[in-house]
Image (tube, rainbow, N blue to C red; front, side, top):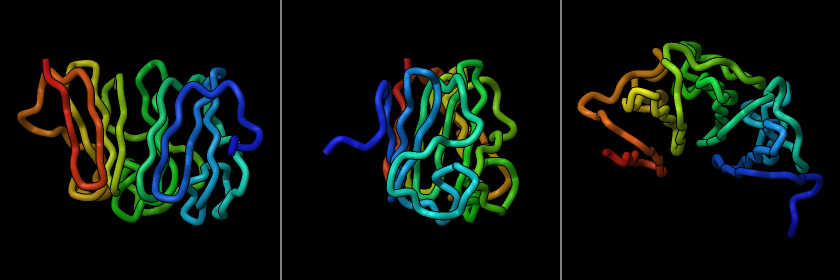
Length: 165
């Protein structure tokens, strides 16, 4: 069945019980579970049809994990919204957010990935940074030591992956 009200979609992502769509105009849309703010429209409630994630324009990539959504802007900043119980927002706060907030402490990123309760950013210098469960919880992103020269990243439920060289 076609998702109601969406057209011009260039990328999709899922996170737990929430889905995300990136449209060709750089806007992000979400639907599904939203009780932790992961729909990103300023409310803490579920959305049965796609709603626009507040304030996002010019987005180049999206990702989602259990309770949070992520957006990468073309200039390299990463934004997150939803649950912060395990540091998923990467901004040092333990408070969930129903609107996007910037992930702090990152250099310009060129890719993002998310899964489980963790998110990753591939920096333009080939290093990978992680935040969320297992990475200092609410302290913010931390570099994954010993991992350099990375060209692509992916995240599963409990594992992270990188392509080097």
